[in-house]
Amino acid sequence: MYGLEKSPKAPFQFDLEIELKKDPSKAKVMLKSVDEKIQEIKNILRQGKATEDFDNYGILLNGYVALQKVLKKIEAKK
Image (tube, rainbow, N blue to C red; front, side):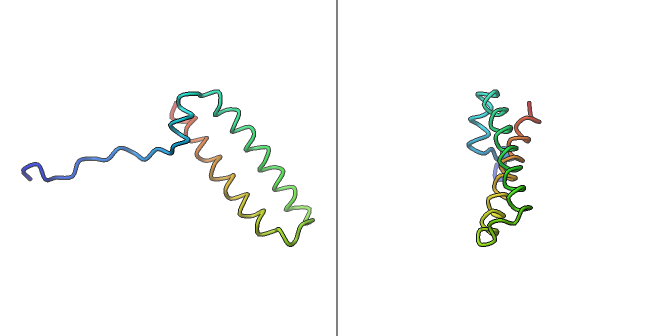
């Protein structure tokens, strides 16, 4: 009322998302690299070699999966 209503906010964009929109080829290279890292970590966890680092590898895997989601989100917006 009388100019006090809330204006719609723009959707949140990650800094990485803004940067990769400028250079789409970089996004494809990063996505391929992230996929390879995820597979490496999954193989390490399946083998069960590093039991003392198991939790750390799990955390690292979750981080890479989150990055992969952001990169796929950027590709889908094109």
